[in-house]
Amino acid sequence: MFDINKVKTIVICLSIVLIILFAIMFFEFFALKSLGLQYDSIGSLVYFFVLYLLLEIPLTLILSAIPKVLKSVGLIQSSKGLLSFLLDTGLTFTLINSLDIFMTHIKIEWLGAIVFSIIAGFISWKLKEKDEEPPSIDSEEFKEIEKRFDFKK
Image (cartoon, rainbow, N blue to C red):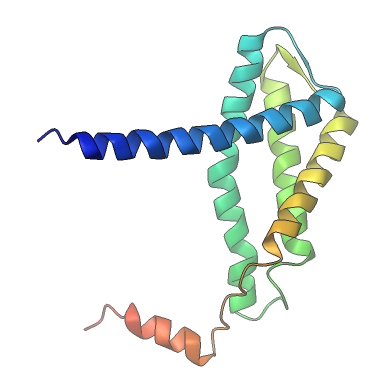
C-alpha cells in the first residue's frame, strides 16, 4: 500500500514545481518592488504572491486558449499575435490591481502595475513565438483529431 518510490517521485516533482514557482515569485518581487510595490509585512507580501500565483495560473491557461480557438475557427490569422499579448497584459494588470484593492497591507502604484503588466505580457508573447499554431477547423489534421475523439460510435 505504501510505496516509498511513489512518495519519492511525488516529493521530487513537487520540489521542482515549488522551486520554479519560487524563482518566478522572486523575479516578480524584484520587478514589482522596483516599480513601486509597498508592503507592511513579509507575511502580507507572501500572501500577495501566493494569491497572485494561484489566480494567475488557471486564468492564464484559460486565456491562452482563446486565441488558439479563434485561430482554429479562422477568425484571426495567428494565435501568437496582438490579441495574445493584450490578453496576457490585461490579465496581469487586472490581477495586480484587484489584489491591490482587496489587500490593505499591499500598495502598488498604478503606473508600476502598467509597466509590470506590459513587461510580463511581452515576455509571455516572446515565449509563445515557438508554440505550434493550432490546426484550422477545415484542415485534414483537425479532421484526424476529430476522428480520434468521436464518441458517437
